[in-house]
Image 1 (cartoon, each protein chain N blue to C red):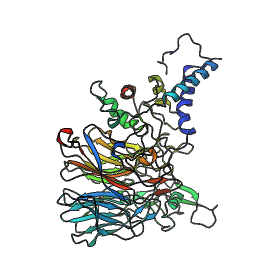
Image 2 (image 1 turned 180 degrees about the vertical axis):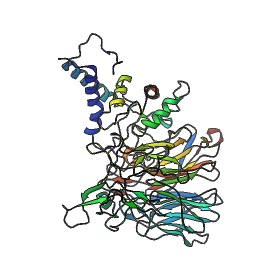
Image 3 (image 1 turned 90 degrees about the horizontal axis):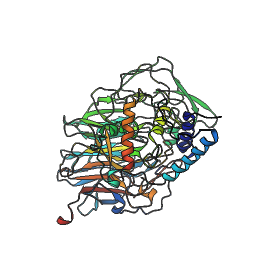
Length: 490
Length: 128
């Protein structure tokens, strides 16, 4: 009996490649044992030749963003909330010349504070709103907190993000979705919010018509753990939907970029169909870009193999959530089918439009977040986007074969080519706690100083992941990357 | 598959031979997989894509492969940089998809594009 070359190849590939995935356990960067204190050692970080990195501040608790006042002094934001449902006080901190910290303002229990920008004497903060709904806050020069906009739909998985000030003088911000892929399920109880907000669900920005697809799941809200419920898209947990049912859109909404006047007022829709538009930045020529965290393999409608995206934002466009990844429909072949499960079924009777092509596709589960554009020839790579990758939260978001993210990458927005820029040394990529070194942990935001000569990297700190995230207080670091002046000028 | 050349002329590919070859290749790949897959600029220095006309291959790799094999390293999927898979095996894997990897049809990646991707991947593999 003989076998053909095709059979032989199949056998070889099946053993070598297929076996690799199905037979191996998850190796996420958070799947490690962490022993405090966090080590900080710049020699454990690799950069392209000619650059250097140094810690500016250590010991931060869940830092998420950095901004600069008119004199170029850095201010760092602490979130006050982390996945894993750990609550602390959100704070805006001024970084003094010697690295000491002064508290500018402390917020309440409505984190996470996800982003901050300084503009015309005031700070503008995106308050994630896990308990009371999202807000954009203005912090006056005297440290007074004023509300620019509130009651944003942030009670779910993802929050209010940004903000940035556009060339038009409006404040642009992102609003994440309540769920992974449009259907409230048991995974949302694991996040923590479903038991607090049993009626919360995604709200579209425009009217949509449903295909009537419903999903059966266990009921974590019921005393009987065997009870089953049926839930449809864009609906409260346990609420089925019908074919042709119309869900009315409204603004503010989920999965959107919106804008509001600096003095407050009614928000306007910029674009929708995002999942979690976390990072927002205007390019040197005034074009708005966003990073968008893609689907996870979790919940009632898990989606496999979708890398985070960098989008060029076109006014009024629909970017595909919860039906597409980039410009590819989720029900296309087996592309997005989790191993051992079924292809995600279509939720909408009609799609609002075909989504645009993304600018770049990041690593699956990398959590590609805050970013900024290089504008200074002295730093280099002018016009490219420098993106902080928080890193995977496997196995909760899905299995990975090696840690993903935990670094700074740069993106050529003309070609979509991604290059590593700041990574931890080692045979394999991973966070410092996984590698047992003193390098980067979970970069969550990157922003250039006003001069453009220095890139500040906000490192959230250690987050171990077991059956849930276990974020570690006082492990955050603010890093600074600049061109190395060389031995002659030192 | 029709265009594949027989890589081992004179060897009759029987089931025991196929199994032995599979085992040998598996061991080879597992052993070679022990080498680091890291090839990016901070680790291995800049890689010139203009010299070998790899620009298009890199762009296509970024669009279709990089999200699961970031820069050829392991991520969602196994590393590619440290495994000596020959071109025909890569083509087979891409066209048929195995395990968790989906298949890519000629509508997704045409033959010319697949050649460009493989050329870039092979150059990336050598860059260290």
